[in-house]
Amino acid sequence: MHKIDLLIFDLDGTLIESKWDIATAVNLTLRDLGLPVREQEEIFSFVGDGIKHLLRLSVGEENQSRYEDALRVFRGHYLAHCLDRTQFYPGIDHVLVHYAAKHKAVATNKSLEYTTRILDGLGAHHFTYIVGGDNGYGLKPEPGMLLKILDELKVAQDRAVLIGDSTNDINGGHNAGIKVCAVGYGMGNREKMAACNPDWFIEQPEDLIGLFT
Image 1 (cartoon, rainbow, N blue to C red):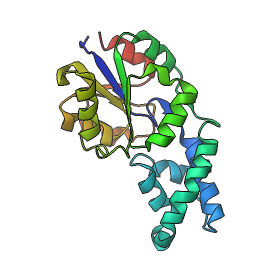
Image 2 (image 1 turned 90 degrees about the horizontal axis):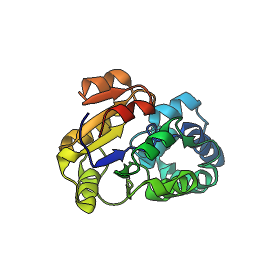
Image 3 (image 1 turned 90 degrees about the vertical axis):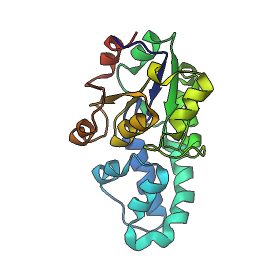
Image 4 (image 1 turned 120 degrees about the vertical axis):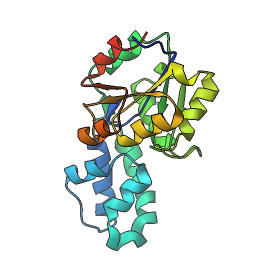
């Protein structure tokens, strides 16, 4: 097993199953703006690069003039609905308790406001440090937010691991010089993740328990 002091988790698709509430908020936003709503699966495919990217894709190329309105309207809908169906993936609670003695952090391209609301509802006490996509350290695959966490928690690169479900996570971890574990249960494309050469690839959260000490 690999010796680590810090587990850094992505949020959507890694810690939490959130796609249903995201899709609900997007379609409520599109409806309010008089724009065509989208199929849930299409919205799911837009997730991973932050809310701004999600909404630019959701309003469509022909409606970019409505993007700022969408960003404003979405905020209200998502804050109201972000805990309707969103939960930790089955097994995540067990993993977090198992690694209670380790530092655990969250590094997400999601805005900190939404991230904080969700984790406050599900279990923010598990995490020593949380960085969102609007904290000013760049979005994964840029390494800024990961390096910030390492610096704040005074953990060496070889004693940290990033756990995520997207190529942005894997490449971000590589760019930060830390080990990476890809998860196969989230929203990411398995083939694309594998092509990025993560150090580990797991199929369910509990598999993390056998990897680190």
